[in-house]
Length: 223
Image 1 (cartoon, helix red, strand yellow):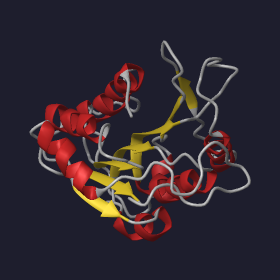
Image 2 (cartoon, rainbow, N blue to C red):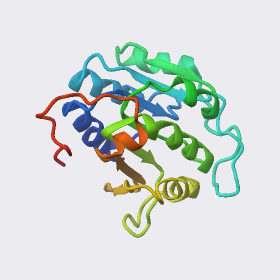
Image 3 (cartoon, helix red, strand yellow):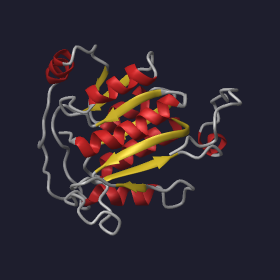
């Protein structure tokens, strides 16, 4: 379920965030059988050992699509927790924290309190909207969200565009926020967006968090 374009962009986004010490764990929402998850764990092991990777999936395939969705139907792309174990065992990596269930059931109470980076691969409008609503308040300032299947055909004409609900959900969620999705491109059909949380968003969205006190931490990590 991954290719070189995805991995390069995830390396840039997640690796940079961890390298510069943005606080929090890493989450993947919509992990399927763990093909991308092992790469995220490798990034953690390389840049920030001790952080935890959290995986979220229904393990029942896709939910019922809504009126803004297309291409996939209920039950498509099922996976199992055993497949996650097998994938991580193949690469000799310990199994991360796995949270099975529908996103509306698991995300509100089972996300870590602070998130440095999140990879969202929910495919449908409601799945992405639920994910963003749960992740954004917990995302650390300068933390980053990467959204798969965000197809902006003006900026990335070759992007895979069969899951229109993803871009619609992102655009709706961020319509009145200071942060906006930016498009990441690759050599083929990559449909990726990134959203970095502004530093000033801490008070508005994370009133319970405490500043790290590291004066040397830049306001925005270099690109």
